[in-house]
Amino acid sequence: MENSRLIIFDTTLRDGEQSPGASMTQEEKLRVARQLERMRVDVIEAGFAAASPGDFSAIRAIAETIGNSTVCSLARANENDIRKAGEAIRPAESRRIHTFIATSPIHMEKKLRMTPDQVVEAAVRAVAMAREYTTDVEFSAEDAVRSDLDFLCRIFDAVIAAGATTINVPDTVGYSIPSVWGDRMRSLIERVRDSDKVIWSTHCHNDLGMAVANSLSAVLAGARQVECTINGLGERAGNASLEEVVMAVKTRSDIFGVETGIDTTQIVPASRLVSQITGYPVQPNKAIVGANAFAHESGIHQDGVLKHRETYEIMRAQDVGWSQNRLVLGKHSGRNAFRNRLQELGIPVASEEAVNAAFARFKELADKKHEIFDEDIQALMSDEGLPAAHEHIKLVSFKFRSETGETPHAELTLSVGGIEKHTEADGGGPVDAALKAIEQVVSSGSELLLYSVNAITTGTDAQGEVTVRLANGGRIVNGQGSDTDIIVASARAYLNALNRLYQGSERLNPQL
Ligand code: KIV
Ligand code: ZN
Image 1 (tube, rainbow, N blue to C red):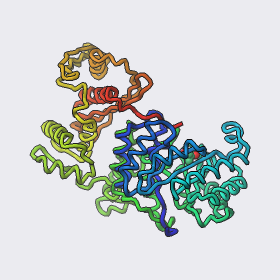
Image 2: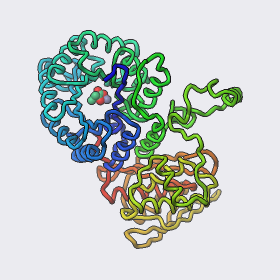
Image 3: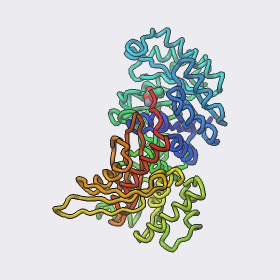
Image 4: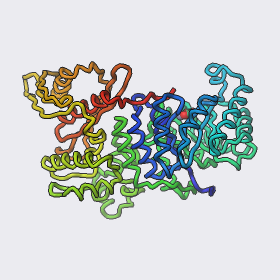
């Protein structure tokens, strides 16, 4: 590979999934993996095969589906993990095992209770075993940031001799700063034997808010793979954000002199999808994918941009997937126009039934909302993620009362397994009343872990997108619902989560 090519290794489905409450179902992981492939990510870390049977099965499904990106599984440096990873990725056209062991004194002594010699031996054995399954083997020295440089050189020499093809240097605890991290990468590349035979990689956490800066510093020092996640999701404060790394090296190619293979127009759709699925909203001022990233508020800025865009914009919104003409369809649009738009937006359609259901909702929405934007369509389709046949509980009709001085009250008719049931309840507010009324019928006893509302587009007729996260009997599910009426959106989101509980499509165990 040319020395100017920067490999983008996405770990949204593995490290990203380690964000509290962000674990995903298999079907959701597949949707994210397809979007990553569409975005032309080089390597998709699909999970950690030994973590749970659910994780194994999701990696297997991704390996069977994805043809244009390398599919990777994480594995600790032990036989069981390597064999599970090897089996899970077997169907992939291009496959990688990513094995790791901690190398810092604190991790070796207190966590692993292993001597440095034992750690080197385990790492070499793991890499050699991984090579039985694939020629593409990555080795990571966990907590490299707090590891002794001489010891890192020793273990990297040994694993390269055993067949590792990518060497990853992680700042596991987000402790470094850019100049130090770049120096560490440069020293390793200079000192490790055969360092020119491998790809050097970096994997930075964001505990001090420097994950992207540290990753970029490593690139300047010679790293040619960056491990990152969509929206910077990940363990604790998260990982380096893919969109920021990719757009930094593209926008400042004069400084970095590298290019990625990423189709940057797929960045915003990927960000939306991951946000919808995990229920992690994107802050409005987030670089690249935040709602305000290309919005100009001050008159001077607006005037400048209207005269000459580049006065205040260093990137073009459409280059990262913000649609230029966001008004797409109206109430007179037909099914074909709707289907075409889905294709243009790269939204995979699970079945004809799903298109029909979404088209019916689109028509309903078009009656209520004058202008329908791409974002509205994306939300409609995310609501249709669960095939109608699997919806055990459906909302038939809804009425609520909210008046100054009166207790909010909701009345709902639900269809539960095909039988209509009427329910009503009072609550602290109309949303509370609606969810209580649903619970009166289903008695799920679920604990509500998260309730969040986001306006999908601008304007007071915007759809509200609601995410709820429920815990029930050790299982955690997310549900989404959208509507111009946020009480209805809330009821839909709650029912969507309950249907997932009934369907058994709970979130897979987060790793470790
Ligand atoms: O942060 C870390 O060190 C990791 C390794 C498994 C690469 O996620
Ligand atoms: Zn990590």
